[in-house]
Image (cartoon, rainbow, N blue to C red; front, side, top):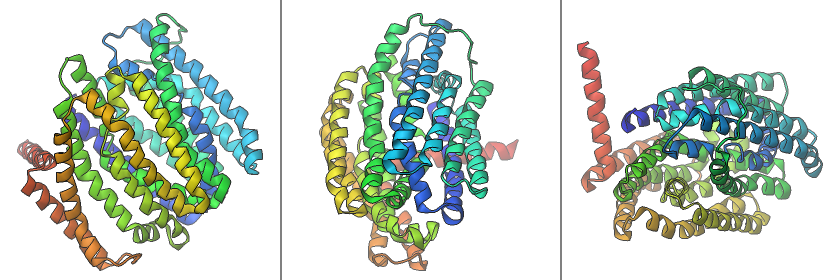
Length: 482
């Protein structure tokens, strides 16, 4: 599948899944579950999440980047995945009682046991999905993701209606993994063969061990806010912070549309063909920053009306956390694929060192500022983002080979379009004003100014928008003629 077509399938499915999941989460938050229920599930999922990042064991990336695949090697990958899944299941189950005791919340036991059971299905989806990514078959991946999301929504909503509280969310997660495994077997290019094999496992384990350390280190940085905030500020605060972080992640998913997976496969192909990454990476940064920066800045500026409109007055404190979390994303989007590119180019050790350092920085920033309240805990993410960028920029420049001047010029053009998009909101909307006609006017005017700014500057994103519009017009014309 061509990269553009794969990107369209990935974006389309991600948009659909995002809209579907978002609608379900809003329904649950407004009518069925209080912030404390989301907080309890978030703490259980965060604890399990640190361990669960072992699940892939780097096998997806190994399959995507491998020059040659054989049935024997794929059997070995499946066997390793099965062993990892059983180990994760046992570890999370063993942690359930200590976690319930530490947080004085008995509901964490069934929540973590259900999450643990989900990882027994890993062998049935990891290799088939990796093969689909290698083939850049994001059409099939889209169907698998949609089915998994539907299963999660149906089960979590049903059990929430029946009064299961946060346990309903864990049941939804289990249903999601079962559906993903089932669809991967039905639609994937290769079904799991019940053949245990460790032949040729050494290079796979060597690569997987390094990526596992990377995954665990990253998971500690990603999941620790829920654990630390839950311990210091309580489950209610975790629920509020989780909604703020979830809205940022949702917007990221909506706009990114899974493109990072597409470009990971594309960049791996470029490396296999011995082609340079410098210009493709600069183009990628241009498109990411031109879209993500204005979106995240507007989300920060409009945090109060957005949270109040979607979740209601009871979630108002989440808006102040959302403001800071959204701002931090400006820096994270400035260096896309900061993990994927070093991995596929053979710089795992250098990446590991930086990842461990950035995880320590994240924990220190949060640990210091969380004592001052929920908003300060959210502001810690912005402080961490600044340091994170300083940690990775040098490594990415050496690996990719782009010039500092080209990157700075790209940032400047994206910053100009971002300011154009956000200027109406700054001028027309008062601080903490609720949603109004003025807010809608500001957003629409900002979108218009954003497009004008991209066109005037000849931004790469403008070229992509024009090309997409032309492709869409030709497609509609062909359909009309047939």
